[in-house]
Image 1 (tube, one colour):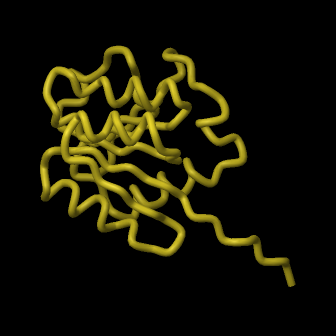
Image 2 (cartoon, helix red, strand yellow):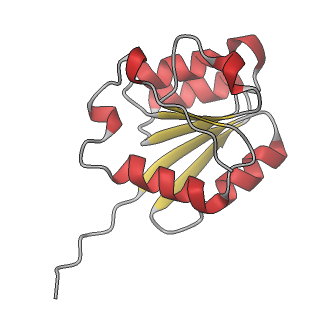
Amino acid sequence: MCPVESSRVFELLFASREPDWLGFYSGLFSADEYHVRCATTLAQATRVLERDAFHLLITDLAFGDASHLAIDVARRRGIPVIVISHGIADLFHEPYANLYLEPPVSPQALLAIVAELVSSENHISETPVPADATKTAAAA
């Protein structure tokens, strides 16, 4: 029998001004291994990103033109970023997220992606991703 690895709690920040978006996506991560926090303003998102430790930021960039500020703060702190938004082709400019997903994103796909990102031995937050290595994806 294999030894059981001690359980680890992964800190996730969901940032959007859209309550339905926050409720749906953050609600997927109610399992014991995730601690979810939500930010409903850009100021709140950047404040908690600068102050607290997170394993992942997930956002829809619904804060308008300054939305990329949250990505910038996260990337400077070594926190991976997933953007879930319509029209992702319009979102590609610095600072880049690690992954862009076009809705609808299946819950199972998002759970699998997040689990892989936060539990990887080569965790993205320990190795900054160069802009030319940014991944893109569209989930069906």
